Image (cartoon, rainbow, N blue to C red):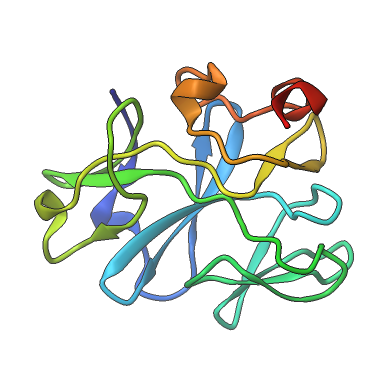
Length: 161
């Protein structure tokens, strides 16, 4: 299954494009020959992120994340935390969020059809207004999520450990 996020031509060469995503926002940007789609939420306290000098930075407390890897590089977000990237695929002139298939969460603009599809989540998931650390990796389908819903505290609570 898939959901169009934006047109590839709308993604800037530098910086990011904020796109709506099922009631939330994503930063969509280019990282080398790849296109990334990261959730617009800080893993420290759930604030929004701003694109600054190759990093996504939270204006609330200055937590910073590397745009290429999603890794926390500075600030109060937990050490070892990583942004949540969505599984994407380029088809025709659009960038699509894809789920329900095996694959990869990076899109190589030069060879988009060479990459398989997947729906994965990073080590962090979203609560109502803040990030919630998960304790176990689970793909979206096994977590019972549909249509791009983000995991909630209920999805990542003690029963999921």
